[in-house]
Each structure stands twice: as structure tokens, then as C-alpha cells.
Image (cartoon, rainbow, N blue to C red; front, side):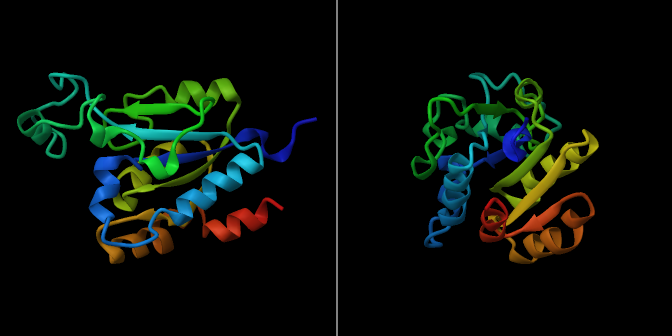
Length: 189
């Protein structure tokens, strides 16, 4: 008999040093993410960390890609760069995969789908930075791949609070359940 959480995974997306540091003026921004990770671990829900990083020399970066082509010139964001490592407040445990992606969506250029399939996962709990970046792109792609999706609204951050609000209140509910971390944790009891 399968336990209800056996087919669910929590994705912690782009909570890496170089991205978290952009929000460092806001105190306690990582608390909802930490609560979600703690709840997942306490309920035997796999936690998968996702980061964006590139190979030395940036062979993945096309000059037509407005977002990432700049890195080829300015440097940084390579797989060994400190800015691409998972933030110390959310360190993965040895059994928790760290997926490296090369585009905005958690699926793009990564082995995430292989990992999810191998684990029999059909339900994703999404959190990350930024709401208008990795979360939006991953919601869309995960929905197209027929995953059941929950977005943890307070475990998502965006530089523009109004964009975050519109996405979590108007856009995401078309393809995902949207709830706070506390509501999700309570639903596990």
C-alpha cells in the first residue's frame, strides 16, 4: 500500500547564493522555505534542489538569449562558482538531489524529469526565486507534463510584489493549487 506522500516531491528552486543575496535586505525571507523543507523531510516527502549554473566557457549560452548571454561576457554563474551553490540556510542532505538547469524552467536542460520518473513522482510542490522566473516557467512546463502542482505562495519571491501577486492569485490557480506553507504543512497532518 502506497502512503499518500510517496508520489509527491518538494522542489526548492534557485535558492542559491547569487540569487538569495539579491533579497538580503529582507529579514527572514528564507523562513518559509526552511519550514517547507522541514515539513517535507518530516513527512518522508523527497526534497529536490534546483539551481541554475553553466559550464566553463558557457557552451549552453546562445547569443540570442537575452537573459543568459550576458553571462558569457561578464562571467560568473558557472557550476563551481560560489554564487550557484545552494544557500547555506537550506543545505541539501546527502540523499537529496541537486539538479543543475541551464535555462529558466527547472526542466530545461536538466535531469529533473528523469529523477521524478525514477522516483514515481506525479505531484510537485513548488517554491523558488523568482516567482516570475523559475516558478512560472516550471508551473507551465509541469502542467504540460501532467504533474499535479501546488505552489507555496509565501515560499516564492519576486523583485516585483505586484507581479508575484498577479501570478499567485490569477495565473497559477489555472494550473496549480496555491497555498501558504502553513496551509500545506497543516494539510499533511
